[in-house]
Image (cartoon, rainbow, N blue to C red; front, side):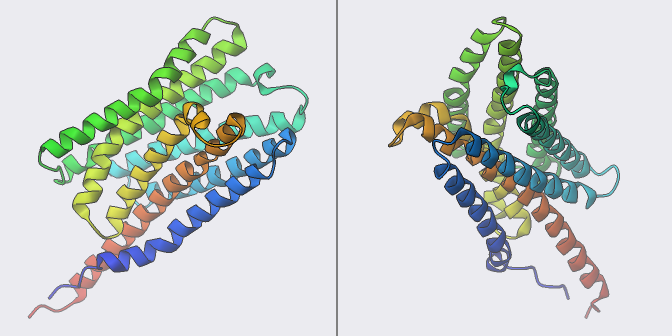
Length: 296
């Protein structure tokens, strides 16, 4: 006799409040930005508060996932790298936040902290990207590799085209800024690191979503869905410069509104970590229950 597996509907009901919380965070940030125009100082404060909030959530969620695995576990390395990326992203937020409050009249591009932030952002993107590469390989090591199919090839093709459409113009612009002065070069390096990492993330969304589709239901499936949604949100975040003119209203304001998608991207990463921890704890409880139940 074995303990029953939790149904897909049960898992969805468990996850729904957390998804609702992410949606509320996104709407609050969006509303705060929309009501801050044209006050640049208030807009910066809104971004600062949002950055700290979702940055901490991402760190806590990914750290919870990493610590739920034993030392030497493959997934502990994956989530450890994601935690490192989240921590470094929070450090980047802290650097900008400190400068904004300490020297409010001087742009951060003129700050001596700019090259420090450049290094932090590069390391954050390297850590996160490498973690996602390992994560996309997890289904192979766990025997969950989906069989090749025309649909899978099409999905990869769409992801590649999306990555090129989003990252190509940004890369071209960043390369053109290299050597145009110290501040411009630092900013360009940050843009290059972020764009290349985001392009890689977009390509990795395809296998992540394929695994989530295979799993169909359950808490583990929601981990993959959360990671996939996080990557998709970053896709739109990266596309904000050319999406903004397509939206009604002032393009500059539309860019700021699209910039709020960073909240969902980081919050979904933190949620994925928390769901991973929850899924592992649930599996361990089920395993203990199966051992305790007598067999006929």
